[in-house]
Length: 272
Image (cartoon, rainbow, N blue to C red):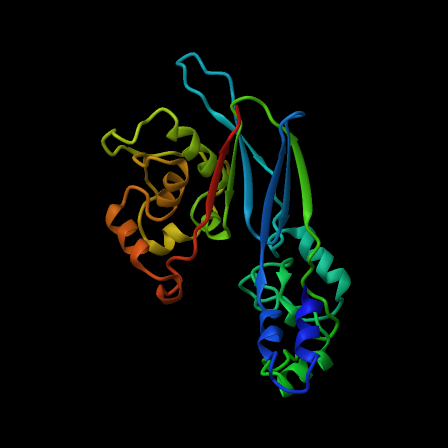
């Protein structure tokens, strides 16, 4: 795809197709799932920093309470993943690529579609800048590509009662994996007509490394009133039981929110 857009851009000496070159500098992470119903196999392909989780119910305990096991099906293509950091260091030894905020050349991911400015050599970027409205080349780009487009695949056997939750990266800044699965599990027994019921779900194992609730300076408390599990997870990521905070966050445009909110994507799939 990058070659297609560059071919269009360079097909003429004029700036007629300069926009195609700019399109090739944009980027996107990717998360997809394929379910083979006849053999009950779920395949998840991940590229970037989105998350796929499988919730699996345990047998009810003596009180009839059902808890869920969490299976992470996506790979974290970020510098918080030691394997990714080591891979990049091995490919680009001695280069100063990592920032204190955990970014790679300003990027929160290490793998993505597009992002030509992290994949093209300097001469090509200089030509785009000089003749086709491109940005100035980053002087740190010496041995591209720095961002990979190679996805990772995971496969799991699906059992009755399992569910899949796919989320955009920002949800991980608000909720732990265990909380996401626990919220979907808690959504089952309650109908949307029930009165608001804050649920203090202490489901996370180990340290809670989510950052947004600390930034908002409010306690993490959840509520179970939404008619769909996707809205249930999204609203609990954005303020939970604090209705006033949630309403404010929903009104803010991510670009003008001073980092208090970003685009939220949630998909939930239940398996019989």
